[in-house]
Image (cartoon, rainbow, N blue to C red):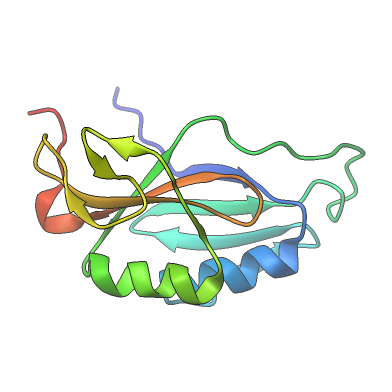
Length: 134
C-alpha cells in the first residue's frame, strides 16, 4: 500500500484575505468549499486555507509551526507576486544568504522564504532545482 498527501491545512484568521493572498501568489482563484475553507489545487495536493471561526468552529487558528514548500516554475515571478500581496520576507539567514531573497542554497535549491499575513511559514523553490533527498 502506498499513501499520498492530498490536502494540507493552512490555518488563517480571515478567509477572504487568505483567498486573495494565495490567488495572487498561486495564479489561480481556487474554490470556496465552505464559509471558512478555500481550496487551491497545487499539483494534485490541495492547499486548504481554513478559517475555523468563519466555518463555525469556536477557536482561534494558530499558524503552522513548520515551513510549507512550494515548487514554482518561475521563482522570480513568484517573489514579485509575494511582494505585491504583502508577504513578510523572512529576516533570517540560511547558510549565509538572506532567507527572504532568492538565493542558491548549499543543497542546490534556488529559493526564498516568507510569512503569509497569518504567520504561516512558506518557502518557494525553483522547480528545476528541487532537492528531494536523493
